[in-house]
Length: 282
Image 1: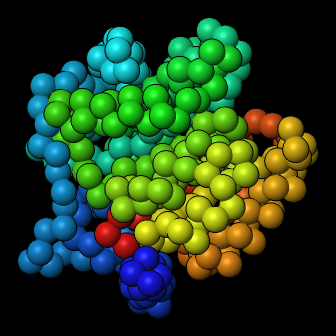
Image 2: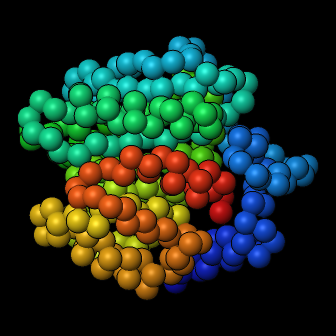
Image 3: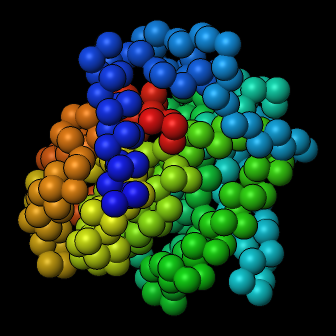
């Protein structure tokens, strides 16, 4: 009952934005000024939740290392050229697909670099971690814990806007990202799925059990018949999310592009245009 009530309140706030103009943002968060065409809500209350971290290198692409799950773990970041340590900056993390044994470092780097151009232009940070599975996939019990340590490292060393943490996952990374986001929706602003489905990890009941309706952008190739036919399952998932309270073009976007089991080359531009003004306060 409590989760249902929270979802209804969240949805009412989001609908208020739509009714008063799609570009109007309720939270007063300085970093939202970087979103295109936004009408800023400059009130007396500052809704920003800065981490106030300092000491991290900027600007550019870097490799950082944390000790997690019994050993040192590398992860890869991109800090935009206009990063200002006095202003809390949004962050997007991206989880790669399973490419076979030994592929995780290269795949993580590729994801960091894939998001870097739009992140540089829109002033947000990109973080990409390596999966730990023997075949290049994700081990939720281990990798979720590593993710938490990575995020704390970023909070400690950079000034991160905690209300604007976004996730992206492709294929195996998308499967497990559904689980992380729906089980801890209160911690994140929104997320993006490329060729990932509920059935692979989170389960079809995860949307209905989520604490809030977290905005979601889904991208799938029209010829993606990988595994159990991910295109068909994506459309089935669409119905599941709708039945759990997600609303098309308000809290749920489905983009079907011309392609197979791959990431749409235009995904960063398409998804960020929808999610830039979203914070976890909505």
